[in-house]
Image 1 (tube, rainbow, N blue to C red):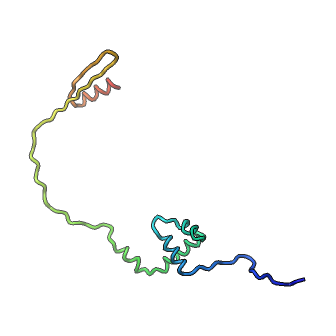
Image 2 (tube, one colour):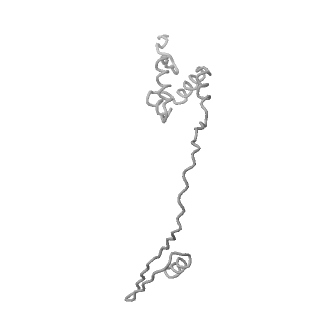
Image 3 (cartoon, rainbow, N blue to C red):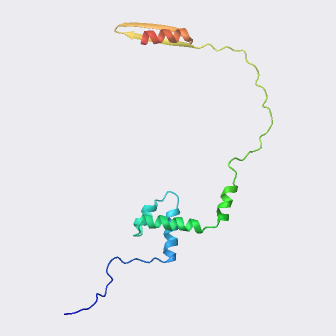
Length: 129
């Protein structure tokens, strides 16, 4: 009988990732429009672990890096010229529009020329209605 110990560890073994690898995948996950889960899957990582790495990297960034973003004003007022545009010449020309309607039913055709006003519109709605 042999009382030899197994040479491989029993249970789960943990992988170790280099700092360069972590930095690379964190930067990939921070890209706009990129899914953290997709980056994790593509690199053989658990998505929750990658999210933790990103959160930890954000916590290590000094607050002065975020200060620049806070100083950008939300609204920038631009100078506007105070010139008044020249007044348009008054025109006293009245434009009267007319509409021409032809209605056919079977062998009968009716042609009407109407002014463009509310009464004509009401008549057309009732006739065509």
